Structure formats: C-alpha cells, structure tokens
Image 1 (cartoon, rainbow, N blue to C red):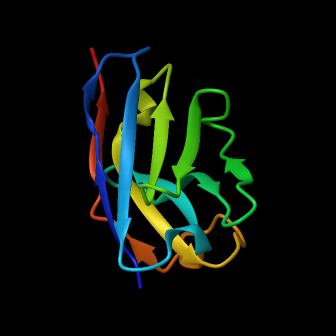
Image 2: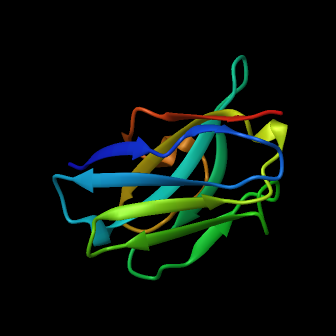
Image 3: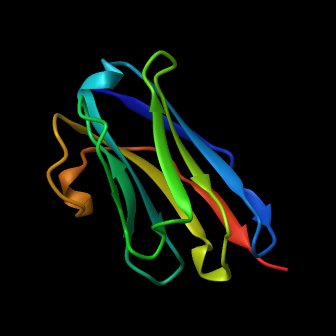
Length: 124
C-alpha cells in the first residue's frame, strides 16, 4: 500500500500559478503510476493528468494541456502539479491518486489509492 498527502492549494487570481505536491510513503513510489484528479461542488470527479510508472510518459486532459505540467521525483517520493495560466473553471478540490503498475486509463476507478485533497480557488 501507499499513502498520499497533497499540499500547496490556495487562492490565486486568474492567470496566476500554483504548484501542488503529493508526498507518498509506505511503498515503492517508482512502481506506481500517479495521477491528479479534481472535483468541483456538484460535479463528477474529473481526470486532469497522469504520469506512468517506469516510462514517465504523461497523459493530459485537453482542458489543461499546455497549462499544467506533471512531474515526479522518485528520490523524494513526490509527484508535483505545476499549474499556470489558471482560470476560474480550474477551481476544485484536487486529489492525488496512485495505481500499482502501469497506467491503464484515465477513469478514476483505475486508481486504488487517494489523498485527502487540497482546495484550489481561482478568483479575482
């Protein structure tokens, strides 16, 4: 098993930037595919981006492509989400998720481990 803890959320103006972190423990981080999801009030959980185990390949939702960047530091057992050019519609609780093994699709049911979430609010 692996435990995940998100941090770095907050309030930012439209066009601003924010960097989220997901610290992991309890298992071999490099063997897990990692992802970020988000959920706004009254809406379904939405895939944002994923990064594969071993390969390091990345997979972005069209809504964030070119603005968000996922990365992982295996030495620190941490995955990051750099968010630039933020828009009000990016406002949501952002969740870190992990899957043991290779990336196999963007549906949330593919990921068995979840963090507690961190709030991101984009508003002027």
